Image 1 (cartoon, rainbow, N blue to C red):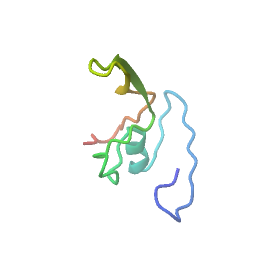
Image 2 (tube, rainbow, N blue to C red):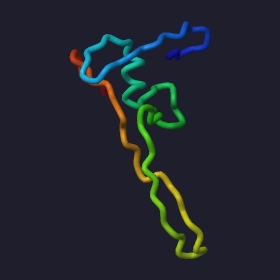
Image 3 (tube, one colour):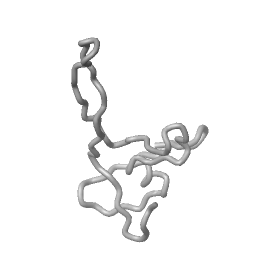
Image 4 (tube, helix red, strand yellow):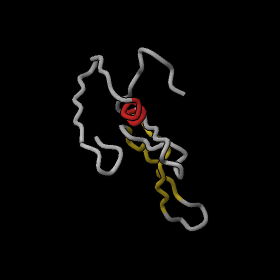
Length: 84
């Protein structure tokens, strides 16, 4: 990962159930939040995949495909503090 242009890339490898020390921005990214994503109101949905909803438009009869929700694959849980 790298957050800013010119920053060195850092690779992280995680195993399920392990405890790791990471920078706060990495933990927030894993939880799908980035304060710099103002247009998305901070929700970037990283580590999540979309659940699509299929329907038919009653007026035109054309199919509608939209994202109904996002399901998280993984996340970060802090042992020291609560993130808001």
